Length: 301
Image 1 (tube, rainbow, N blue to C red):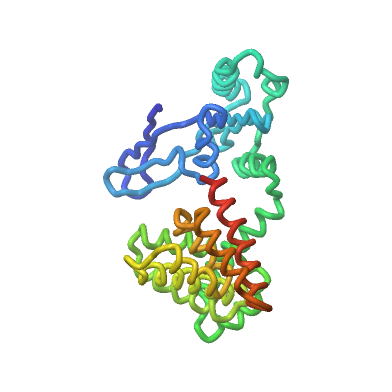
Image 2 (image 1 turned 135 degrees about the vertical axis):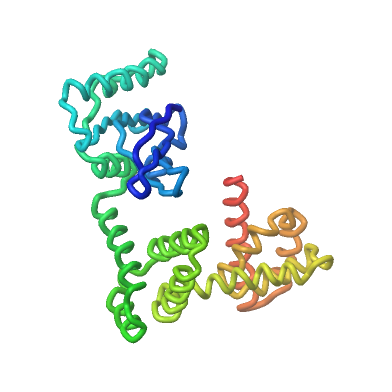
């Protein structure tokens, strides 16, 4: 991978960056993730530690989606003929790397992306992620920043006003922000975000459900740990049959899959046959759900 240098806007030193211009998902599936996360072409100043993404001409290729996209940063102020001189060899390199049977028509009609945002939107659009979805995610990111800056007296009111946007993806985004604060060792930001999360757990319907699932997951982990050397098929079966909810059962299946073998399910069937009424129905439903969980775990593995 080539390297380039650029002046540091903070201290004036020279920042160094590993340059990647071809993102070929067919050659390296991780190229797509690196591009979407903005984890490529990052310049780092060795003097002051400042980091920023540098604008680079890009060729993106996804053979499965039949995408060949080009992007040339407008702020490089380069005329079209000069742009083609840079992008042309990159496109040729992508095409020449493919065997003859995979050289399809789309390769000879690369699509020009006028902005970096359009490039990202086109890649995500091929995955079924619409511009509306991206706008919703952008709104949620702005909402997190707004909630952080909201005074404690108004926080609950704002949360209730925006509750329709506070869902699974919102909490995932909030959790990623918490992780970033941990990595940056920003205790003040972490404490603020953690407090916001606790308020969201208490004040939103999705938050209360999420907290309940988290508590059930932790309880399942604790119950398994407490068994220690007494963990066997019978004690595991007791935990399964007293599962308070789906999250608890899912955690047991994920952590103790090896113990849920043929003999385990034979014991479970015996308990079902010995039960009556509502208990029999409950045990039967647990067996059905557990079979589905173990099959999905096995398929994933």
